[in-house]
Length: 242
Image (tube, rainbow, N blue to C red; front, side, top):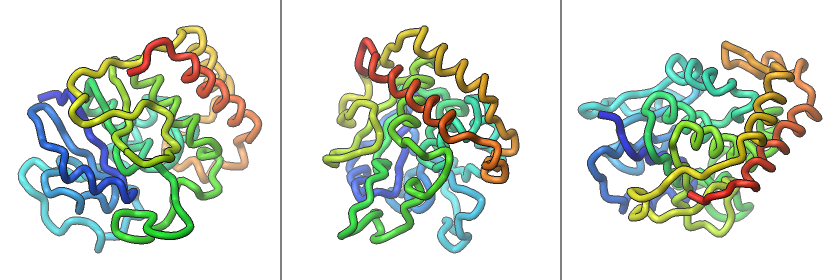
């Protein structure tokens, strides 16, 4: 059954609110890394190749599946690859869900990518701020979220943030879980989308293996920043909010 809603669970402190989201028919939960611990009825656990074995579930429930690089790299490549999408698991999980599950709504929670200097950074305490590492693909988390928002809308999928945190690096609209059933994709100007996609094609920063970090000397930061600006402008000119 194709889900009409995918809820993606990140590891931010706010993800614990997902424990109170009632599970509805045609709804699936995708947990990133340690977030499989948040609720027992998750459907998919997605993690990078270096995710420690001792942090993974020792057994799976009926219908549960682990998604690895062998699953998500080919789908990420369908959306232009990791350099343009942003090489951190929140975006990787969303693109995988978009391509593999084809939902009508993707709702993210615990994916704000804001890490306070004091207090917990993750729902389990203090963890690594992976999206803030010095990485050519993560120079603007806001632009990468804009790109996801736009490309999802082109596939007929609304993307929203269920977070109630004051700050978030995700730019798409906030929503309450009770509203997911009536969301519609945002609309963007076709010429803006075409300009951004053409800039990506011209740069040709595509690494089919997904291991873009082995080619970082081939990527120009000014070119990446220019592409990011185009996606940000595209999102700013949305004509209908989801």
